[in-house]
Image 1 (cartoon, helix red, strand yellow):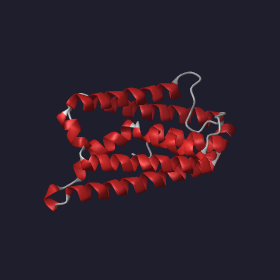
Image 2: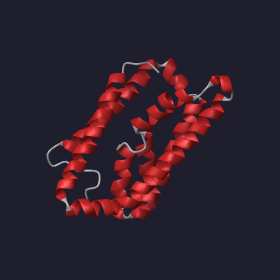
Image 3: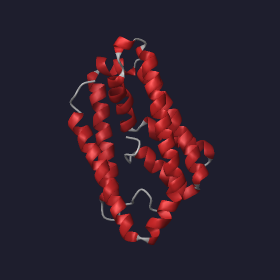
Image 4: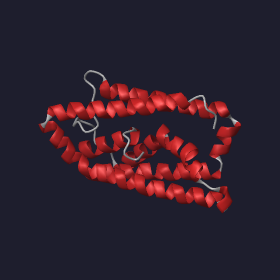
Amino acid sequence: MALTPGPNMMYLVSRSIGQGRTAGLVSLVGTAVGFVVYMVLANVGLAVVFVAVPWLYIGFKAAGAAYLAYLAWQTLRPGGHGLFEQRELPRDSYGKLMRTGLITNLLNPKVAILYLALIPQFIEPSRGHTTAQGFALGLVQIAVGVTVNALIILAAGSVAALLKRRPSWSKWQRRVTGTLLATVSLALAREVPARA
């Protein structure tokens, strides 16, 4: 899941290419804080709220599916932009980079579903301390997500330069990214009616 392109990866890559690796890594700190927020909320009861108010969970999933479909369209449409294409972006302060990274992650449907639907499936009540298991699994996910995104940030500039030299590769990268986003969107849309 960490390798699936989504809002976090798009934001981090755009900041890394547009403002440099340091900006990308500062933005990554913001997204990491977002992971921690989700982990804490999921382990202290947000899942209970979604079970008690099923329409809230269903609405959240529907909004997430629509957002991913929008990102897929932005990538696949004529004149769309790929993940690693260079373009001019305004330079942001480190504080704004962190805040935007946090907000991007908090609004990322993939992360919400990860913490509220996927990780709980790996918790075994028979082993006791379900909250501790949830935090342990969450910390593993955060470590994997931060590591993968940091590597992508560090490689983004080189990949962007390569794609600029080879426009046909850039077109294929856009198609693959857009198709992956659309596939995740459709899979999520199929699950929208399911309750928490």
